[in-house]
Image (cartoon, rainbow, N blue to C red):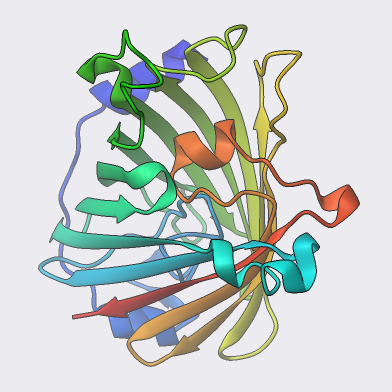
Length: 282
């Protein structure tokens, strides 16, 4: 699995000519031999998709997760315990994006890069491949509770190789081998370096609607960990310059280290969260 990280970090990043984002949203055909619109959102639900923003475009993604609906009216079905993330994504080129975000979950600040390594081609290369790397700072850790806390303990890292294939005009699938590292972990038995495999898909229901789902299989979770593998199901609605995503998930965190390593909900007992992602192109 470590070799995946080396591939992500060492492969050269190639820039290509500019595509039009709104045309990509509306078109489900072939353009310049490349297969387009495997996914309409930058994320499937929690996992990054192989979609990138176009050159010189700025996209704002507002992600919101209410608290657990299991608590009913005590928390007004999660309204009282909501968390929000603001994420700004900018296209330095059609094949290289940078982003910065802030989440109220653990007061996390995160910066990331996302870059295209290969594109699916009609009757040619079978998949699209994208690399994703991020670094985060957890500012919620309290030195009063953790006397030996140092700045380095607040840091976390993620590296992903995202592989997608558009099977036909309606159905797309994705695999995302993932390495992530937290310098501080709440469970002593949990290793700081962790591995996961993301699986996701999209099925188009109509011109503007699709059903999406993704799942994260944690490969070295500690045996005594209370956390679960994240499973998310939702819908995409495309309206002009933005995509609105509504979903249910058992992970309230919205960064990879959080939803892969700290998903606290459980679908089997109704402990899940309703949320949405709203992206707007400027």
